[in-house]
Image (cartoon, rainbow, N blue to C red):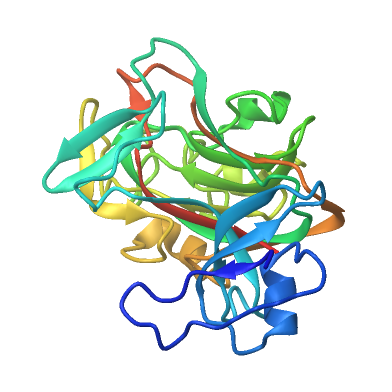
Length: 289
């Protein structure tokens, strides 16, 4: 037996006996061959015949049919959960989140999520973060940067080497007004009547981004804004209201032009040191198919 279904942790009702004649390479194959398979942990094999224990989401997700494999998951609301290696724990007002290590300059802290040679053409997921200090969104001068740079105050999600863009999660400086006299340079690209609304994000980002701020008014240094989580489509005030009209929020969905089996990388970036800004992450889940 080369495919194992572990069954529910709380019940044996969903257990099934599988006896395939060939290795099954994905959650989608399991769902295709056994349509009644529930969401659960399964053992599948990659293209090299190596087995891997994965969680399969067997219902529709992001408007696409069943058979998704989860490649990354973090829920810092669980008090037993730890930050990924290299990330620093923020903890305040009952909120736990993972930010960059202490830095004094522009920097991206990375976490790589192995796909283990499982081929996929779609990526779906969600990301929840919080604002710390005075992030600058995607400023106009970031447009001279490339995908390998800290082009965003927030999260860059990519796959492969060289990096290919999946999604960008932007942390803008404040939600109710523009920052002093900058005309909105540090606001969301989707904010109306701002300087940056007339400047598209970098070409490799395109429209594949979410943007939100956690500071209702003037953003202050050394402040962890725990009352408004980012990229969840909630508490969108004044200037950022159009940014919460993106279809699917809080879920993103990216269809790739060609199949790939390369790993996914999450980078938490900022153009200044952590004394000025950070975007600690509280929750994420990422699926491929």
